[in-house]
Image (tube, rainbow, N blue to C red; front, side, top):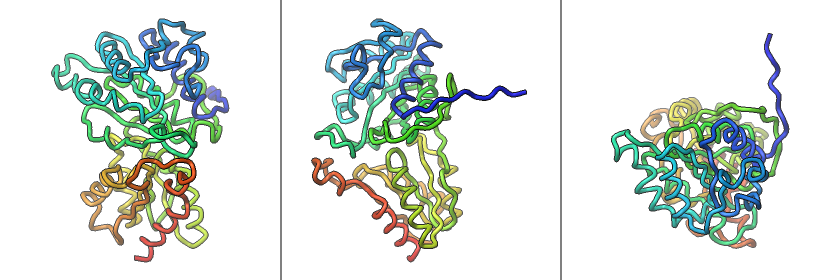
Length: 331
C-alpha cells in the first residue's frame, strides 16, 4: 500500500522558500546570507519567515558587499557549513565575480579534492518585470565558462524546490538562477517535504517530430506558446526545458535534434557569446549529419536590457520564435 504524496499549491518564490526551509530543518549547517534576507524577508520575499523560524545566527543580513558575501560563504563552506548566498539581483553579482571565478569554482582542483565548496548562490534574473538598469541582466553564459561550478535555472515551482534542494546537497558550488517573471506567474502542486530534481537533466515538455526548441527559464512559456501556434500551421514542435545549463543534458538534446532534424534555440540573453553558441556547437558535434536545416537562434539583442518602453521589443516573444520555426521547416 502506497501513501499518497501530500502537495500544496505554490508559486515559484514560495517553492524556493519551502526548499530552503526543508533543508534548514534537516541540516543545522545550512545557513542563509544576503542583503535584507533577514527581518525583511528579501526583496522578493524569498526568505520570508525564515528569520523568525531559525533566528539571526542562521538567516544573516549582510552589508551591501557582494564580494564579501561570496567570500564569507566560501570560507564557511570550506569549514563545514552549507551557505545559501543570495544576490539581490543577478546584475549585482559582478563585484563577486572574482571570488567565484578564482576561489569558489577552483578550491576542489586547487586542493586536489581535500576541500570542496558546497555553497548555493541564488540570484533573481531576467527582464520582463520593468526593473531598472542592471536589475534585469541575463549573463548566465559567463558562468557556464567556469569549470567547477554548476548553473541551473528552474522554470516552474516544482523544479525550483527540487533543484534547490539538490543544489544545497551538492558538494560543489551551484549558481541557482531564478527567473523573476516566473516568481508569481503561476501556481502548481509541489510535494511537501524533501524531494530532488537531478542537476544535469533536462525536461521534455512537449513531444514533436518536425523541430526541437531548446530553452530555459522564463522563455519556456514563450516557447510553448510558439509551439502551440506552430501546431495550428501543421508543424509539430518538441520543447525541451534545459533546466541545467552547466552541465547540459547532452544526451537529451542530441536525441531530440537527431529525431527532428531541426533546432531553434531561445534565450533572452544577448546572442553573441550566449548559451545558444554552445548549444549550436554541441548540435554540430553530435548531430550534424542528421540536420535538415541550419540551427536558428532567437535571443535578446547585443545591448543592455533597455528601459521600460523598449523592454518588450528586446525580449523574444512567441511571434519571433514562430518565425524561426517556420524558417527552419521551410529551409
